[in-house]
Image 1 (cartoon, rainbow, N blue to C red):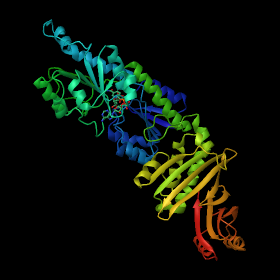
Image 2: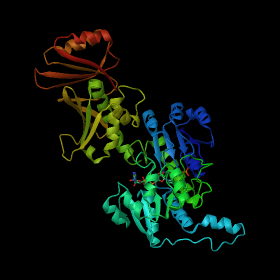
Image 3: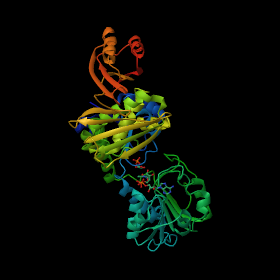
Image 4: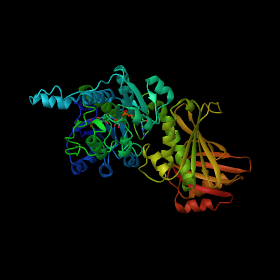
Length: 525
Ligand SMILES: NC(=O)c1ccc[n+]([C@@H]2O[C@H](COP(=O)([O-])OP(=O)(O)OC[C@H]3O[C@@H](n4cnc5c(N)ncnc54)[C@H](O)[C@@H]3O)[C@@H](O)[C@H]2O)c1
Ligand SMILES: O=C(O)[C@H](O)COP(=O)(O)O
């Protein structure tokens, strides 16, 4: 039974779903890094929010870990490259808390417009300072949206409902989508100069870090109000403090900070500054949504191999998984075949699908080819780390989907380029389920790729097969199946033999020395 650790506070529904799905679950929150490292080896899955830091060190200790599930959106607390290298799937729940977070941004916008926290403090202190608090209306004002993805677009929708004008800066926002959203797509500079309120909704990346830097804050309209419910680090906190102190920025509301928990900050106590402790996703509704989603996704993966919302692996629905299974077996064997035959010489790989295979989700097929190919170098390769390892090796990977119908009802072709040119192998499924090699380096054969095999290329000549059989027989190696293909009578022939036991070094050398032999290679599937 797979075992999952829930290491951050999560709605109890998550644990209940895991148990109902046959997954053992422990809920242990508030552990230090060292404490987590001490126990993580026991678990197949780790369910987290933003508090648990899934670092390289934690992953190194996670000897059984297969999946990290983030009940929420941001995964900046997970070292994804390290997880990918270890073959651990990282998934999140990209939509479960978007409405809640958008509502928090709107709530903070109103709080800024009317200085609500300060008015509340003053009133409860018995001051009744009616003349001190003069707010601004949001109606007719311009909201500048930095990042127009899931949350940004909900914020835009709500702001339009409040009769605001919305301008958006997002390099990935298409003009058509901007029209659908009812926003005006602008450059960052234009947004900075026009917005009365600016709200940030991007991930923290190299291109967004300090997107509101001192220089960019200086380009904003005097009296602008800034809201950040996305990630700490998007706004330069010191520059913001200076701009609030000078009065250039009239107000700023941060839900997220560079360092969290933010127990102290130069911004604390600054007039016009409002803060919440990373509460963007904290509503009952959002927490129920993300808890249910993360537990269902992780249970699907651990139980049936279904992949949803993974950040380092292509999606594979529970319905697709059984259909793709024989194709992935075929793809992996073709990858393993070219990997074993061409190895380090491979510079690029193309994966082509045609017939019934072209109707399927191609990403898992590509992943399986790479798993087979990269598995030649390491025993720990899986679908998650294979593409990562291939990239690390500088392998160029190309996917091609053909509409044409070929000789087979379904076909996967794997072509590799080496310094000697391009070579390819191809396979099909017999009875829609049994993987068969049908072509190897231009020669037609029909072979099952399984167990221990011997690959021999020789000049086609009478008596060769007998001599080869004798050599193996003399060494006590039994032949299970025998497959022959040749370019032309008397031309180059390819033999693929399945062996009951591997042929040892001495017999391999004997075979190499047989007249007409060009290549001999032992293969393992
Ligand atoms: N405060 C919270 O509790 C809370 C809750 C949920 C999400 N978040 C955070 O909110 C952020 C947005 O979440 P989302 O679900 O909308 O993500 P999303 O991926 O749907 O949208 C992000 C948008 O940012 C855009 N973007 C990327 N680089 C950009 C750049 N350089 N300039 C401008 N735009 C850029 C992308 O094109 C995308 O449209 C994430 O960082 C997430 O972690 C915070
Ligand atoms: O990215 C997210 O989903 C938010 O930052 C929420 O984080 P939390 O689950 O720790 O509240």
